[in-house]
Length: 445
Image 1 (tube, one colour):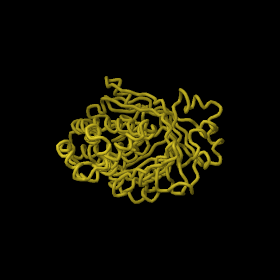
Image 2: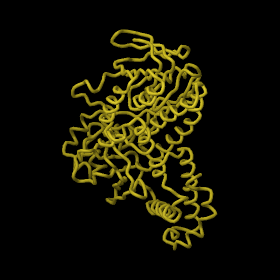
Image 3: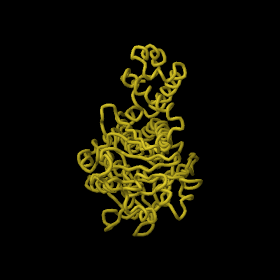
Image 4: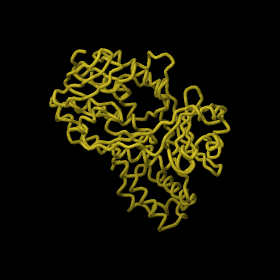
């Protein structure tokens, strides 16, 4: 294997988009992927769970010329529908003007990105390449592949190799601090037939400690995901034991009645764990940078892991474009992204709680939600729903998290002072209660 200018470890979506960004700017890029080429394995499926694309992700795809091809394999989703245990349901639009986010099957997107990267001049894709070590001094990578063990020297290493990153391990060996842990939640993917649910809405059934979600597919069917705790009382995989079907039917009767082969799927589909990871250092001098899950593997419940990874790529490219000093560029990249990753990771965990846990005090929860909706309506430039800002803007995740905390505090304060009657008060009354408290939270802040 010949030396290369830039080596990217990891041939997933973030690594491939990084290759397409960087090869036209900086020349030769070699992508090392430990798995075989999924396009050449007849009948192989891999992970089929859907992923979500929103504004941040679309910008990166547009800049590498793939917005049209990717959109052609996506489904627009306008909101999420909670099917509650009391039989009621509630739809939350993703934006006030009904703009959609887009759902795409991970495997289809991956194949499209592989084809596009392979067609990009200067990009070389190498499969069955297990990176054993990253030498930060050269820099170089030690690789085990079909030709045996080789050392590939390069100008820059980019770690796009996921939550169990070998590239991150090299930083940890130099003193960086990482946190890697497995969530108490695990999941199974369940095929769900169409025809009984709105095909342009994400549907979910919360239980308190988990949920079942159904994500639209282009076929009109749905990709189902069962999220449960690994251990503990029901509903959990441990409590399900040999009768996971019975537990599913008890806690999710509506989808259970619609999925004809549910028992067989629950018995044969693998149970996958969720690993989250973070690291306090993302770069090393002018030799290495981490992107995507290698530095911020997050809970999947906000749908922003890939979008945030694509934003990493675009930010890194912009930093490198702005100077010939690679070390300074990498330092600017790290400084601009670490707090962003912390914020969206926190939001993802928060969103899981929102989706999995039916409110204990339903009346209080409905009052808070209704008051938020009134504030969004009366002060559209000051108050914007959190998910809408995350999905349809490129504003700082850290700023959005702070704004939402301030808004939550304001809603609780107003209800504490004026009671739930404020929700239905005339607009003039509500406006009179808000201005002083609302000045600190603006769409532009």
